[in-house]
Length: 204
Ligand SMILES: Nc1nc2c(ncn2[C@@H]2O[C@H](COP(=O)(O)OP(=O)(O)OP(=O)(O)O)[C@@H](O)[C@H]2O)c(=O)[nH]1
Image (cartoon, rainbow, N blue to C red):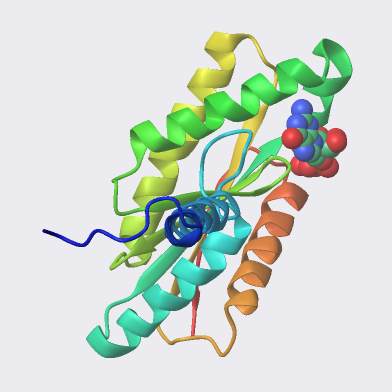
């Protein structure tokens, strides 16, 4: 005769409760891990356009500069800022402005290579990291982006244009924030010269 224990005792219940508890802990850890991965990804994504955001740009930029340090390749960054975007919000409302920002992001995705990491830095400012791209390559891509965006805005009936600046790095900057500062300077130069233009600069 087999001994299967005293089924009427509370041991089975206690054992079962412990097992159930263990399963719940394992499951909730799995969910926690899943949720924290998802939150990590979301914190890198711009919710309006679905492009990567400024934080992602910093991380990816640092990784690309480390690669550049090893390979000796040049690296360019393209900065795109819409001209007179505020007038869209003012004339047609915030939703129309949002639509225009989403359209801009979609056009950047269409025009750029998959390896050219496109981000929305904030507001109407976008950027893209162009690994292995020298000044001439960066400038010709900037001209294409400029033409494509302006054509898109015209077709959509918005009286806005794009200012596109490219900073080409030959040496690795000490801090990636320095790179974004170069972008601000380039943009300032284009805007001061009358907006709606393309400008490329080598950064030593
Ligand atoms: N619709 C919408 N507007 C935004 C968003 N984020 C920022 N803005 C607006 O974008 C505008 C950006 O300011 P500016 O770059 O000075 O506007 P601008 O008219 O393009 O100026 P210039 O660059 O000098 O031509 C501000 O009016 C913000 O309120 C957003 O997520 N959606």
